[in-house]
Length: 230
Image 1 (cartoon, rainbow, N blue to C red):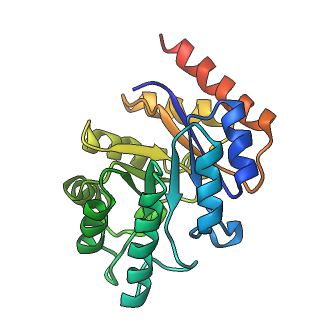
Image 2 (image 1 turned 90 degrees about the horizontal axis):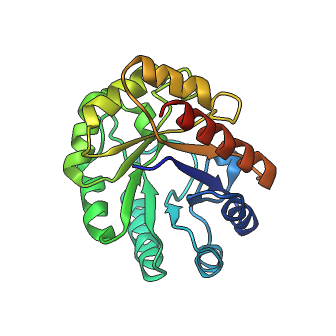
């Protein structure tokens, strides 16, 4: 897999900046202060019309926990169908049960309903009680990628668990580090992976408002690090 950079964007303008700066993919969200909720239909449609890189859309009807009522779950499925009609690349979701386990029934149904779109499990994963079991459950459910900070506040702090997850996942699912990853620390993060015989080539970056120079600096840091590994 080539070195990849995914940018989390909270507006169409930010998504366009990310593309111009060289991002390989964007995650489209709304409501930065709540950690990301479902964007409006118009926002999703306009982003898909204007961007040429893949767009994954978060489906999260509210902030807070990842235990959804039956009504909220019906809204999630309806949003998914609208996003599918717009030909998005994928959807970003996450479901837990009260005991902290993955809600395998919901994520399996969503993965089936979303086809042929990709399904990415977001950082609800960092709240689950057993991440190793969770990885295997999400593989079985048909999830494409897992976004995680290694169950810590930042991916750098959680680098040890991220390495373990990558080894468990193998080629069956992609583990994507996210939270607190910057141009200043991506090299340190990848060095920690190297110490565990693991190379993470896909990283997820979050910021309220993107500046083209910030994204370009991250890309340069990634490319410099990967060149040193050759």
